Image (spheres, rainbow, N blue to C red):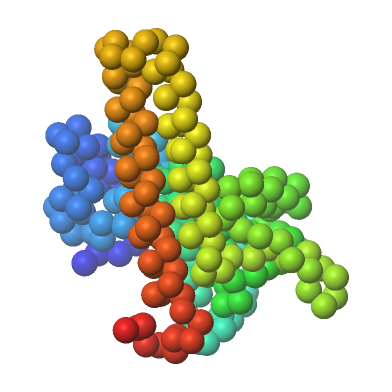
Length: 243
């Protein structure tokens, strides 16, 4: 399977594949590339409907030029546990792209990826600034957004430094927050039923929205509680599944 950067000809093939309605996996198979490479390429350059081969190629060359100017001389600092620095960087880009595809802005996705891929699951603002090579203001804005979404939390360490943390419970809390938001949507929809008149077409539509949201919310809550109980049982050894 070929490696390295995509060529301009490959990008043209990606654009043609998207125009033909092919999936990322099918385009990747035809180019003999990993599906993650195609997904990242398209997401980073306009998405499924906005991808343009020539613009994507120029943007990639521009990013490579900027990295070359900013890259420090010498080798990258060694990774813990003997990890391959290039492989880690590539994986972080892949994970960031995935989070961006789910709706997170780029800087928020980069911060969240850094926290997920740190062994302790916790970093200070200074560590994030150094790791991402961005301004303190950018980190602060990203952290505030992620905290508002329930994706991270803050705590103080023994040196009174503020640290940002992700842990096992964060996705449970995020899903429960989503359920609560949807519950407010259901309640508002039911208010419309009374305003528009029970039994009218508009009221029936709103009632169906409320019932659908209620049903899905109950399922998500039940699944999230079961997953937290089974997967994050503190008494279960980390290298074994809970029974």
